[in-house]
Each structure stands twice: as structure tokens, then as C-alpha cells.
Image (cartoon, rainbow, N blue to C red; front, side):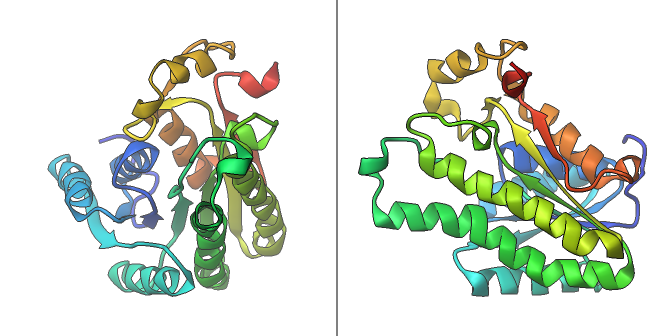
Length: 250
């Protein structure tokens, strides 16, 4: 176990059954948080929870489709109950990232991307942030992407959804920051996960454009998320932190 700066806190991590979300759940648990692993896949969720518990951490799984406002409401209710009446940290990691020409995106695909990448974080924050504000403390970290910062052919749908999340991050920082709730975001670059495996050599080619010259490991993104969730980032509010190997700096 690492330093337990998050001991006594309850952290809800969406999209936590794989990739960046799973790595974040594991790291927050290492730092003492009771982590609520939220996701669609019960088997993968159980595996993440079991791994955390085997290493001495505290975690529980919450099945969540997050397809609409009602599913978000149900998740926040279950998380609050399981957390003993409070959720102190929210990590909005759930997301989908279909790539392709704009003309080939179906209306259903457009709706699915915005429902999960934009509306779900909105509904979760709307339900959890006021309670955090009432307690005078809390941390929310949104997982965005480097392609929210610049245009890339074939990534208009995904990039625009995360650009909306970036603006929400700043607006929520202004809305809830005065009551002690810090809201920030990370912008990952190309990251090796199960979800990006299908990109094959394309992932390496994308990563080669950055000074780091390689894809990130999910744990590297999780470290940035954990920083923003913890007290060492106590004076960081409304920040959009690039964790992209330097791609948006050049």
C-alpha cells in the first residue's frame, strides 16, 4: 500500500471495469479510499474488486449502464448508500470513442456518444456535487482527451463530446468551488488499454507525434487523476491537465 492520503473517503469511479478507469480505481484504493467500481460488465467489475481486496484495499462493484438520467440517478443513490451516506470523490471515466468520417456516423451513434460522454457526467455531478458542497469538500475529476484541444479528421464526434466536458469542468469549478468542491479534468493521449487494442499500429503512430514518442500506460493516467483527487492538489481548480506525452504542447 502507498501513502493513505485518501483514507476514510468514498470514491465513485465510472467506467472502472477496464483501462484507465480500472487503473484509477486500483490506485485510489491503494491510497486508502473505499472505491465504488461502476461499470456494465459484472465479471470484469468483480475481477477489479477482487484484485483491490487482495491487496488490502476496500472496494465494491456497482452495475451501471449509464444510458440515461434514470440510470445515473440510480447509480448515485446506490453509491451514496454503499458509501455510508456520502461520496467524496467522483471520477467520470466512462466513455466511448468511435472514430470515423462524420458522414458515416449514424444518429444513434451520435446520441450514444453524447449520452455517455456528456450527459452522464452532467447528471452525476448534478446529483453528487450539491451534497459535496453541503459538506464543504469534495473532488470531481473528468476524463477528457487530447483531441478535445485540436481538430482531427475522423474524431469530430468523440473530440467534440470531450470538448463539451472540458467546458463543463470549468463551469462546475466556478459553480461548486466556492463551497469546497474541486472540479478538474485530465486529457489523456494515446493509452494502451483493452479498448485501444483494436487501433493496432495506429496507436503507436499517433503517439509518435508527441515528444514522449510512445503510448501511455493506464497507470500513468491514473496517477494524474489521483493527484487531482487528493489533497496535494488543494489549490487546483478548473484545470484541464494534459497527460499526453507533450502532444498538445508542440
